[in-house]
Length: 97
Image (cartoon, rainbow, N blue to C red; front, top):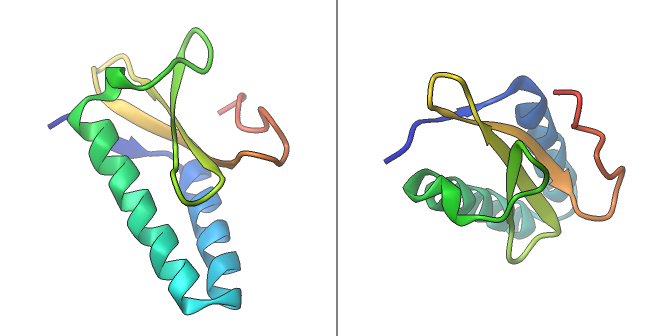
């Protein structure tokens, strides 16, 4: 399996989104956590499987939640999660990461 790193910005995105779901429903928050874990497993198993976002980044579209997990390969051959981006809010806000 490929080594994945989670950037600070992506970690903050995830925590903010998880908190938002938790404030509304424990079940929704648990589902979000499970879907994110599934995304990480799928990316780690075959990171080049998912489509390109641009020339450097790839993305995984979560199935049950409107989020993209955006990632790129590092110079050391690892894969860095740069954003857990809501599909309908602030497109490209993470691009400077």
